[in-house]
Every structure is written in structure tokens, then in C-alpha cells.
Length: 334
Image 1 (spheres, rainbow, N blue to C red):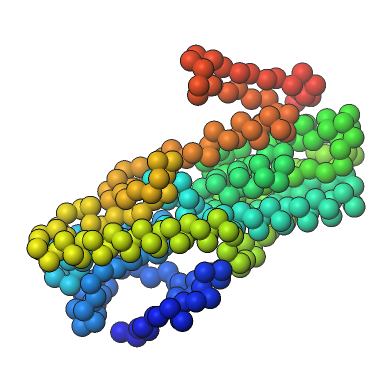
Image 2 (tube, rainbow, N blue to C red):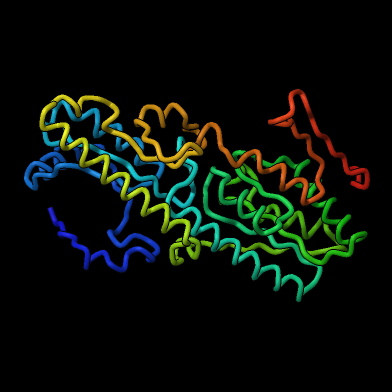
């Protein structure tokens, strides 16, 4: 029942702050619905904004399903996607993901300087993101890495050895002195960042050595990026408008909150800002990998392959029946 009334002065400095000024923790609604409904009734809550990540979608569903039993939950409930993993379906971006991506890129730039001083070194950088490959893929592209591993594109031993052979070629014939691999922190069921590093050290003799770098919680502690500041402002204003319109409509139509559309999430899409009910989001979610079924950034791996001179096959999205294939003839067989 502890709560704080917020005014303009209270939130004045929040715009540029990183993290969560409201506080954040893992708290499941299962088993706590009666208590939540009781507090909402006592405080006369007229609307709820959920700010959270993947699990919040399922909390949204649970709250909606509890509406018939608790009158105090018959209010507009809107979720704002906020997770650095950017693993929520139906939205292109979640709050915090861009800020984290900037931090990872800065860390990779620092590692590049370190490696160039040491010479003949390959860094394996581990990011957050779990089974979702957004951070590892986008960080690899923005940092000019040689490859990115994630559970969405899990590497086989052939993939790892092919990358090692590519490194040998670059270090031996193209006179490069630095390499970079980016992996998410749950990129494989069996391989780990230590496995990759050990393979680099063993198979890379005498061309290079491998080192691992775990960025860790530094990814969560930066000042919000300009993009995240803009996105949070847009999300906030759009949600406030929608919330107030539903509250006004409920004065003449008490049944409005039985509709699934009033338990929704605001999303950033290529067509602008839209609202999706929780069922639509769940239908578009790969629950095993805890990420969207269709990820817009997956096609960007082709850019990564082109820049790193790896073998690839690419089916054009604009030219019918067109397929582009590159096989590096200089690759060593193994």
C-alpha cells in the first residue's frame, strides 16, 4: 500500500536518467491478484501502466482474466515495453535496448584499442540478451565484429571452426591484428564463451590468441541515449492519451473493459505507434526462446557476413527468385 504522489517537480530529472527511478524487481502476479485488487479498490486506481519486459505480457493476460472476479481491475491496462533484450513481439524497439547497445559498442571500441596494442588477439565479447539475438547481432554490426552467436542462430562446431579458419586467413594473408566475436549470454545449449576462447587459443596457433570479455551489468548502468529519451516521451504521451480516452468512454459504457483491446501494449512499428492486445503478442512469440517469432533484425546478419568475408547465401527480398551466394575460395578445408 506504500505509494508516492508524483508531480512535475518529482519527475523533472527523470528524462535523462538511466535505470528505473520507480524501482524494479521480479514480482509475479500469480497468487497476488486478490491483494492487488484490494489495494486498487482502496486507492481508487482508475488505470494501470505496466512498464516491463517479456514476463509483463503474461502478467497483462492474468490481470485481464481476473477482471470478471474483481471490479477494481476493470480499468484500462496498458503495457510499455521496457527491456534491454528487445525480445518482445509486435514492437520494433523496447525502452533501454538502444542505450545498452551504445554501451556495448563503446566497450567493443575499447577492446579494439587494447587488442591493437597487444597484437594478434581475438576478443570474445559476451552481452546480455539471453536467447534473443538482438544485442549480440546489432552490437556485432555496429562494432565491425566478425560474427555474432545467439540461441536464435546457434553455432555448430563447423561454424566455429570456419570462423577460426577465416581468422587465420585474415591474420596470415591480410595482415590484420585484431578479431572480434560477439555472443549473447545463452547462445548455445552446450558451448560457452570459455569453449570458444579455448578453441581460439588451441586452433589459432601460431597466428593469434583468444581472450574473453564479459561486459556484465555495465550494460544496465548508462545514461539514457537520445533515441531512448525520444521513445520514452512518445510512449508516455501516447499511453496517457489512450488511457484518458478509455476512462472517459467508460463513463457511458461500463462494459468497455471486458474487451481484450483494453489490456494492451503500445508498440513502435514501421507504420507508427500501434496498440496490440496481449493475445496477439503471445501468438507472435516464440515461448521457447522468449523472443519474437519473426525478428526484423535477423536479415541484417547478411550485412555481418558480407563485412566479415564469410560464406553466405542470401535470398533477395526485393528481386523475385533472386539468390546471392558467396564462397570464399581461400578458406581452408577442415
